[in-house]
Length: 110
Image (cartoon, rainbow, N blue to C red):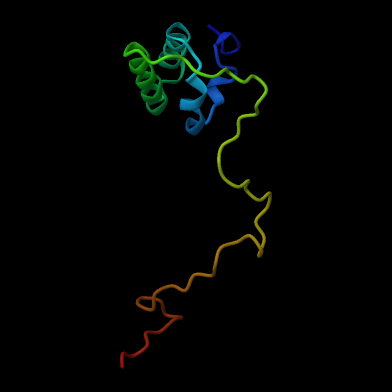
């Protein structure tokens, strides 16, 4: 089964944080298709755990809910990374410890 034939579009690129919500509308057959695909292609343990947990819930009587949105872009959480590092985007200056650095002699304790 190719990625375009899976019940979730772009399944291989879904962020883990969105996966549990996105598989909620799937029935057991659709979920099994994702499990089979992940086991043979990706084998990502966190993804498999989410899929297995949902499969157990469905086997225990949970019902699929909602619908699979096909038009939502999938993005990972967090701020976008800056395009280039500059003095404005670089981290703070680091002051190395005084021991063992000849250019930064130790200060006497008081």
